[in-house]
Image (tube, rainbow, N blue to C red; front, side, top):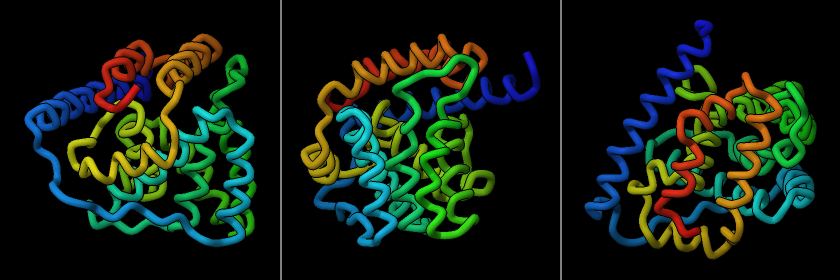
Amino acid sequence: MGKEKRRLVREVLRGQSASVARRIALMLGRRPDGPMDVPTSPDSALAKEAEEAAAQQSPAVVGHSYRTWAFGRALASIDGESVDEELSYVASLLHDAGIEQPVENEDFTIRSGDAAVVASHRGDDGEACVRNAIAAHVTPGASIAADGAEGFYTQAGAVLDLGGLRLNELSADLVDAVNDAHSRESVFREFSSFIKAEAKAVPDGRFALLKKSGFILALRTSPLPK
């Protein structure tokens, strides 16, 4: 096993331990009381273009993408971290743009990253930020220091939406409001299929590693509505 893969395995195991601890906290009812602010999407030409691009995805991916943004943005607020509102929104809405049609030996984040061209309105730096955030969302052990706040919170929002990680840190009112606004219908069934197909197409990829590490089981046992 190469050095990079060993590092990823260590980060997966560390993440699994954190997930267990947070599931216990959730079961014990340890989560914020009262309302929390539901994030408001940016109102800009770039945001609208990202929404149009996202609309080309399946309903399950569209819903997951918007919830990824809302949950990630809420977690950033809890952590007291700043994100670029526009670029974080674009990255979240398009992070899975390449997942529905697997390509042999090509990681789906490459195709998702190609959708980041919409961020070129913010120049090369804007596009690079979105591409990096999309790549980071499936990087075990992602951090703000290494991957930027946009990448870290795209991952945090996506993992919360699919596996429930850090769900105990959000109020039930906020989670219910986000789920009501963006349907969860078919999300677990479809993403289980996407992960299996991607792992088969890219056996040395990160989804293959996550599948071997029990990520599909994490989806099936998620505390979020099925």
